[in-house]
Length: 209
Image 1 (cartoon, helix red, strand yellow):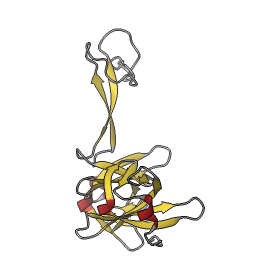
Image 2 (tube, rainbow, N blue to C red):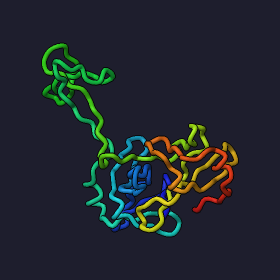
Image 3 (cartoon, one colour):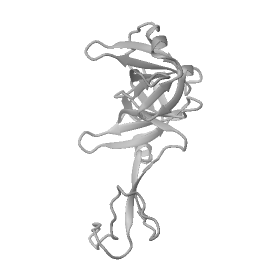
Image 4 (tube, rainbow, N blue to C red):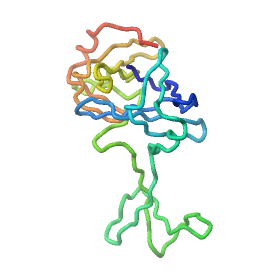
């Protein structure tokens, strides 16, 4: 199975759910736990879908073994929370201190009363990363060798077997990086255990549709 950013996703009752935006995986086991499905253009909404309800179709489209009503009940990817700021703890200096909401529901700036700060919580399992397409791929010496184009799985279907990387501007070269070559994963970067020379020796491949 392969996961492409932008791949169309539909529910079991044929409703459009959105498209794949991120792949959530355990950086130690290289197992995929969830997909982040994005819907909307101006007002984007991202929902976290367990991988065990995802099946693939020819052409890269993904189907969820969930009706649209259950999909709507899945957690959003990013959730903002208001956290009380302790008098002895300044909290995140980049966050904004807010007073409690006014009767109309809007939060206002205040110099007195309880103070809060906004925190963004990611609704994915602890110790996992939400890898995005286009994440930098660097070698053992932090030399960039490409960007993530696809995530491919083998058997079992939740275990990543390869990362397809792309290199170049107008004309892109694609190579398959074995998952065993991955040393660490972050949401925006994949670091390899090998050098750029080893990557260059891999054959150029055509990406699957």
